[in-house]
Length: 94
Image (cartoon, rainbow, N blue to C red; front, side, top):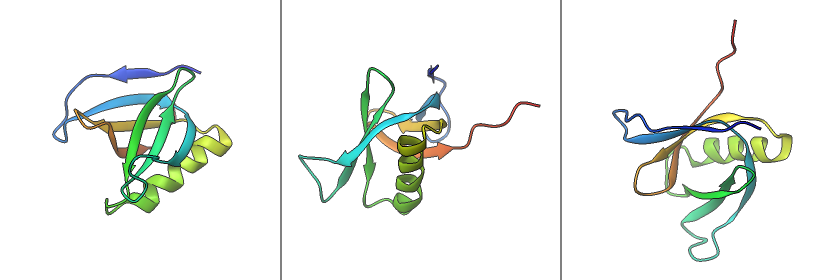
């Protein structure tokens, strides 16, 4: 698995983890009512899904697919919060 991190800033202030696979999805032990804990990569980095986000169910579905099926996505993490804000399909190369 190859993972790259893009530090370019966008209007949403995200850091992108491109071609990344989720290695674990679990309730956050410290704040289970607020967050789901998500691990990315072989040497896992920990990020979070906010249960209060409007698109929580969509993001949770994509993280679950990645974890269960090994599907890679481009994952946008909000700077300074470690909260996953976007999970995008990887564009196919033609």
